[in-house]
Length: 81
Image (cartoon, rainbow, N blue to C red):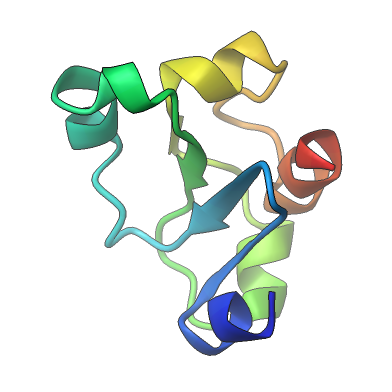
């Protein structure tokens, strides 16, 4: 987790959230067989902002876990635990 925070991401062993640099479409379209649990928030500059921001997009596997665009990053990380 410490390395993730240093790189502008937060999450758990199950999945992660990240800034706008995360390519959710790539994860959904070309890497879907890996069933990656991930979500992205845009316009964030700090970990606090990432946790408080509404998610802009999520992977299909994240949706299956109940993680959806519009929920906060904090709520998404809690669902990943």
